[in-house]
Length: 102
Image 1 (tube, helix red, strand yellow):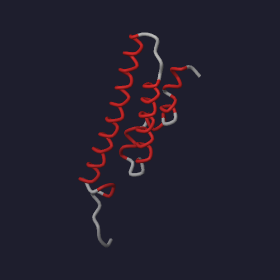
Image 2 (tube, rainbow, N blue to C red; image 1 turned 90 degrees about the vertical axis):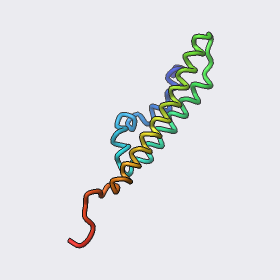
Image 3 (cartoon, rainbow, N blue to C red; image 1 turned 90 degrees about the horizontal axis):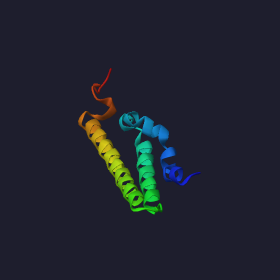
């Protein structure tokens, strides 16, 4: 495994969840997938922060990547919070269904 690919290894573990992020956000049982994405982004950011670089340019690039991974994690959190608020505001997954006897 190359150093670059090991930086991103945590992201590979939840690639399927990343590819279907919108579905995970709207799925009532999507919480664990969203949490796995967040953990993977944090782990990849940690890998990047621990990576060694030979030049100032590489250090700058790694710093940019680190900040981007942290920002991506915050974006996922914001999207999950917004999805939860929308579910709550509309009455959750049963919105639009009348309660009571049939």
